[in-house]
Length: 118
Image 1 (spheres, helix red, strand yellow):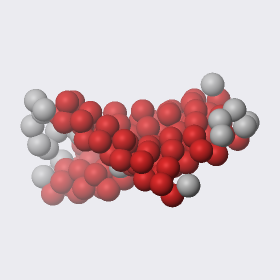
Image 2: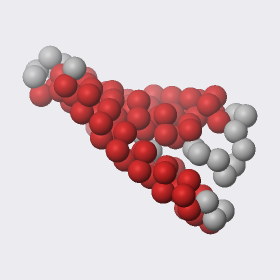
Image 3: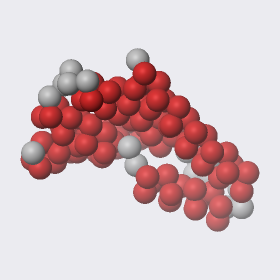
Image 4: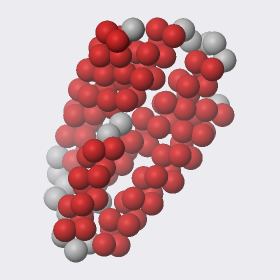
């Protein structure tokens, strides 16, 4: 199963990199980190869906390891979220950092719940 997680993770990491570069290519540093925010929100939503499907036995353990743990685990990124928050704080953009943290955490939880429910 570890190989499934690794392969899924490689797809998730590559997807995160490509999507973040696409979203952020015209954005200047020190602004709201839209790329990471979109990635974490969509990843939370997908994880909610996949987790529910796994709990109800609608997808196999193989798919759970590949998509849920591997892909979603590498696609979403807490380390970049932390780095971008610190960068905003160091740029003395405290309100923007607070807004980023609150929006990221609250919306990620809500979208994961929506994914789980549907």
